[in-house]
Length: 171
Image 1 (tube, helix red, strand yellow):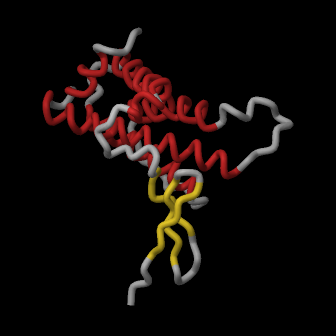
Image 2 (spheres, helix red, strand yellow):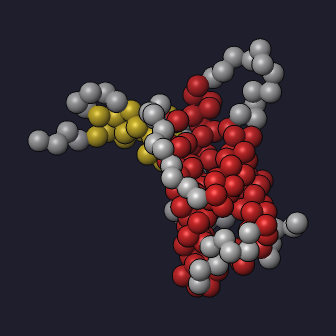
């Protein structure tokens, strides 16, 4: 018998709570519905999205053979990493080649900057809920970019997204 899950909203984030064991799992942000086509998400997170895409383009300019599939794989890995952090689970080990590792590290630096931006003073108390909220925003941003990667790969081929986004990111 399957135990149904209840969905609760906490700080505009949806969490599934298992009735069996009471374990909470992050399932998305209601306020920042990354699947919607409205412009409010892009407006709200324009700086984060730009920084993430700038990091992607910087690796593409250094490695012209980088493909959209590399970007998609790295974004998927980062989504897993931050989802594990949100759900307080152990992170899975990612197997990446050297170009993917470079891309992963560049994008991860931007993610960490956003997640930890409010904790600049070492004496500040770490608010776990605030970090989870910021990590949830990063997950939503990564998912939004991943949708764009898939869309532009379909339209433009193996480097469709990279060529598209390269037009808009100032070097």
